[in-house]
Length: 104
Image (cartoon, rainbow, N blue to C red; front, top):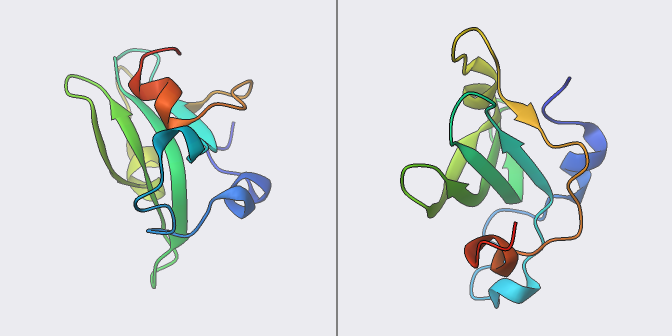
């Protein structure tokens, strides 16, 4: 499975475009996770940088929960016990507030 599709990438707002918005108004565009760890990334923004990598911003749920950036190339390179990162194909219609309040 591809982690990122053109359709999902088109839905990602530009980086920094949602600064200062209420978490209830910030839509999560995609959810990525690793099946062998507690790492989950909820992407809310993203854009390509000069070398063509997609840099995404969103909420990271892991050992520590925080807002942060992740590179698509880095995510694609992750392997734990031979398994790669995955995209939740059924994830839709949630906000940053839902994630931060642990409703998902």
